Image (tube, helix red, strand yellow):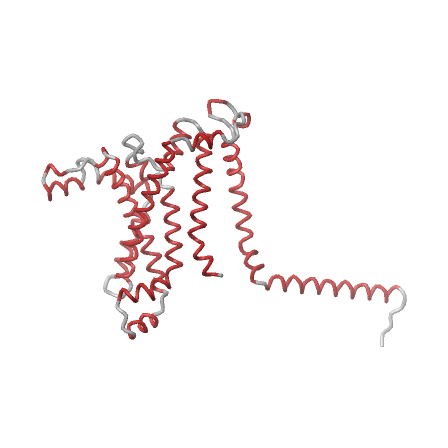
Length: 323
């Protein structure tokens, strides 16, 4: 038996106390890390800090610009006079803002609806094995890989007065049936929407096709055994299963389509006049053409808040399902 006397015994007791406290602290940290909620927070925290570092300073500058009256010709933006909510008041009295907003909503509603319908139809068509399937899928996905500028220029050439589209129309219906696509706001918007549908239907197809591949075959087989037809199987078995993926795809596409700029800028520059101007093009015109950057900042903030609210409403069904 070993005995400790005097200072040696006290030092040993002190070291044992430190070891117990360290062990207890390590155990507490381990238990904390084993909690699922804490683990999830740790996974997203680094990216959240990075995004905050990248997004917060520019967003703070935009808010500052919206509350002052500054144009590049006025001198330094740090010395601009404070005007409070004057830019926002002016915004809600500007008819062009509401026309641009309505026009953008129309483009989003029509374009995303057709993309969903066509994408889902193609996904259902390709949800079986056949010869040359991989080649066909690659061809369908190709438009999504092209830059918006390229797609805009392609469709601009297609819809010229003497372009391929009018050539086909005149060949079928006669020379007098041609359409001056970019001379009317309605036909110009049709051309823009067709370009967006052509480019982004592959995205909806890809999301729907991936979701359909995850639906268990046993569910469809059980429904067929019970006498369900194809529409009933899709409505009551397939679609409820892939609904979360479809909602996410629709939200992503709606948000992206709301920001549409390149297609319109390349094809019509917002014309004739401003009759095809989207919200992004309106902000560009006010900020960079007319130099009213404070007013453009106010518009951007209002649009950001509106989009955030719409996105929140859109993801609410997914949050309810998780709970």
